Length: 305
Image (cartoon, rainbow, N blue to C red):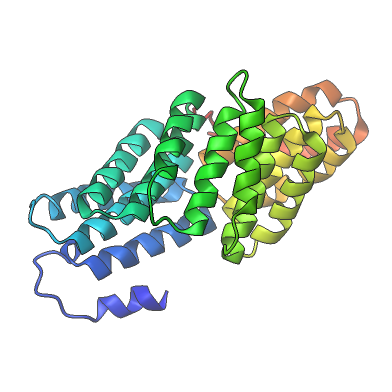
């Protein structure tokens, strides 16, 4: 927040503040924090406006690499907002813009971040082969941070988990992601949750549940959005493992978390949980948990796919 405030008072000779790399980088940070806090749906108009303005700002082929790199970061964050809001087509185009700008700037880590985003969006769109290919391209880049390398291995593992015959390769990639050190506490918490999702896709339910529980408990201090997502995944894992009592307990927690964020992905997850839990609707705990979750579901909730 201090960085965002400081750039407001720095004079710039540029025609538009979007031609100022420091200003654009600060915008990316603000957009990321708002997404973590609120979810993507309230930020769609802002994200679309940022994309339009950075496209204008970097139209000049002579613009500095520093601006291209900052604009790549802002396009990446805009793409993640749109992805969380369920606007996957435009999210994919925004992430492609992020990759283009990062490539023009020669910024390897920014390219890796864009490949991470493209992999994430492709996987959610139901194309694990494409998602795996993007992750593999990112992993071939040199000079990538530990956090980004861990994330790309995680993306690869989760993608391979959905491709027949790739179970061992998926587990190997997920294990490699967990083996990367030097992550920030936030990166570590998010990685634990995302690897847990991968283990759930591999039907290693006990380990998946433990990792998702750890992530949901730790990441709330940074992101109500991520906490709601990991709670939802934990519930689905418990239902698939035929543990309705544990699922009911976490459904009550999700019902309290749901009104705190506005996310098409979280709404979709809650809808899927209600559908999955119908099988146990005669179990008193599940019946009560379903009532609590239904009571807080947005009236216009829809499938983000």
